[in-house]
Amino acid sequence: MIDLYTWDTDNGRKARHAMEESGLEHTIKLVNLQKQEQFEPEFLKISPGHKIPALIDHDGPGGETISLCESGAILKYLATKAGNGLYPSDPLAQAKVDQWLFYGSATYTTLAQQYGYFWVRAPEPIEEAKEYYDGVLRDMMATIDRHLGDNEYMAGDYSIADISIYADTHIHGVQRIGLDDYPNLKRWHDVIEARPAVQRAWAPF
Image 1: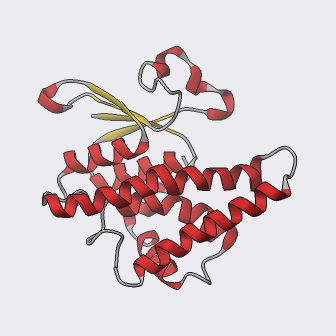
Image 2: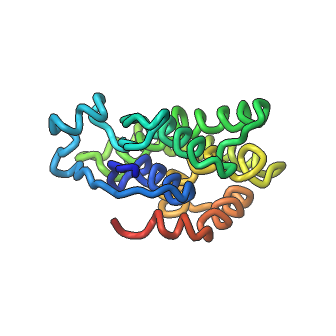
Image 3: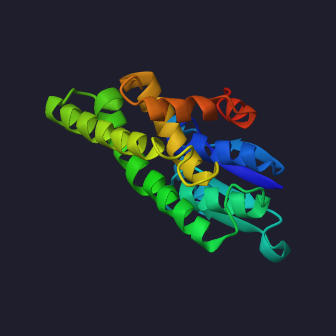
């Protein structure tokens, strides 16, 4: 059994998306960021950087209990444990998936969160920052759109590379900027959105 600690954020949705796709038995443990539950001592033992998502797998490698944080690491762990193709076994295919998994986790989401802060959550509008991050996010979306012009998914077959990029595309691309200027990205988004696992992952907590 896996306990997934999460909340309604881009990284939180990524982890739930990967969990639903994995088919692994799990329970959802909500960490209310609005109440700063991520700073509670028991949660810090699981996620020292006080971030969600995090998980505890009570049947980890060798039957040992393992705790894990960081969304990219969680996606890779779940896909490897599930063994259902979300993380390939071929080393060359793994390298391609890793490339876009890390892009999604370290670049795309990191900068999209800055866009979200200045456009949505900042207490006072800072127009220079809003304009800057709007340009950054649109440039990243254009990069992904060009790549998807020659590829059905980010790294061959559907994988955790796609899961790492989907959440911020859905939150910021669909709900705020729009995808009309990014037809390949829109096609990719809509195909993923229709997956039953994704419908479950984006249901209300």
